[in-house]
Amino acid sequence: MTAHSAVLLGAVTLALVGCATKSDMAELRNTVTGEFEAERTQREALIAEIQELRAVLLDSLNVQQRRDITGRVDLQRQIQDLNTNLAQLIELTGQTQRNLALMSVSPVDSAGAPGARPQAGATDPVAVTAAPGDPQDLYEAALRQFRRGSYGTAREALDQFLAEYPNHELAPDAQYFRAESYAEEGNADMALNEYARVLELYPNSRRAPTALYKSGLLELRRGNVDDARTFFNRVVQGFPDSDEFELARRELERLGR
Image 1 (spheres, rainbow, N blue to C red):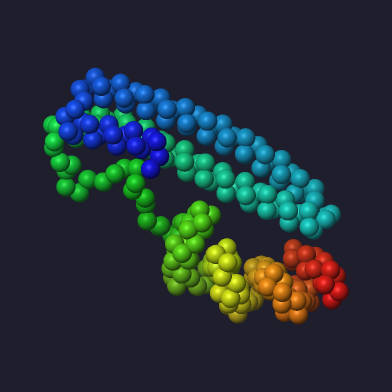
Image 2 (cartoon, rainbow, N blue to C red):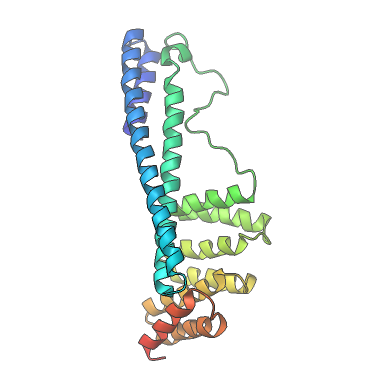
């Protein structure tokens, strides 16, 4: 529980047990509202800074496209990280907006008389989240869980996506992130199995060479040099136009082919 949530819960609890006057609650509400406003302002400033930096990186990416493939991949990863941070900040800012909306209603007034129970069916407006309404929403919800490190929850959402939309354009990405979730958990065997599924189900997708390259890296970390070399060779021989081609070629040179 955050400090703001604790303050809000304390305010409601005091109101319910009748230990705070309306003036006490108003003063507390004004204090918390001010803190929410300051927090929102700070996040909005951070969002603006990240958007500006992302624009600079995108310009750099355009310049790099005909030059160094490795540099381009690094820039793409930086932009992806910025997009992730930006999405999280925007989500937090929305959370602050909902908290401010909640604070605009007096806890005493909304709860009724001291000791009164909440109305049946009442929900916490901060905790309620909308169910995904389309494939894109479901996929993005899964990615949010993945980025938070909730890999099991992410896989559940990805499984649902793949079961309902196996032919969607995002299906290769969903299968790829299933593999990534196991890799992040340190479960190399399951990760390799799921990377193989990317090749089995979506052999012509942009995720296919990535899955091969990541499989090679996993085998290399486990000391299986021959298996790693096999994966890197599959990238070089089968996907010469992919971003991973140059990365795999360099690994092969380092390993002496």
